[in-house]
Length: 255
Image (cartoon, rainbow, N blue to C red; front, side, top):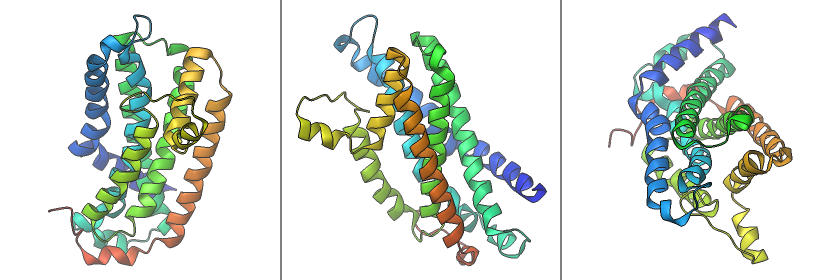
């Protein structure tokens, strides 16, 4: 346990000092919320505005995009030339994986809290009665997303290729979930397609909890995300081979 805590502390410091990591999970969501909210301000009423809508839907999408940064975190020691520390240090595979996973989850979750708090105060989103459950859902989504990203990243050979591949399903899921523009339909077939995106269920559960005070879907969604995160954490530990760090570089990152 002391070894894991020291590794976690070191990885959290690394995450906090990473300008790209913080900017992507703190600055980017705020910019997107206020930009898209402003552009669609005339499409909504006065009680429920575009700012309200994008505060709810943009955070889950940005959390999903964190899968890419988690994938990089999985192999960053190769890029930073610190691979020998992990190759010869008396640490287990589980400790390496958990330190990276928990550091990403903690820092991104703190960013989520700051973004949601700031946006809610500025635009007066009536979320304070549901603040803790929503943050809990976003934290569990972050855990699941980082677990998937870490599972992919620990075995990747080229960061740019992995990044480009991951961008496609994440952005497609965001479009189906209405992260960029609200999509609604009465067509049952199209509605089924929209609900193929996990982000659709996450967004829907937050809307139902905040505006309709219906918590059931949120807790079910959180439970599924937690199960997915645990499964991919186990897979990451099982299939991780620390020998892959011996290459000493991360092709594609410095392109």
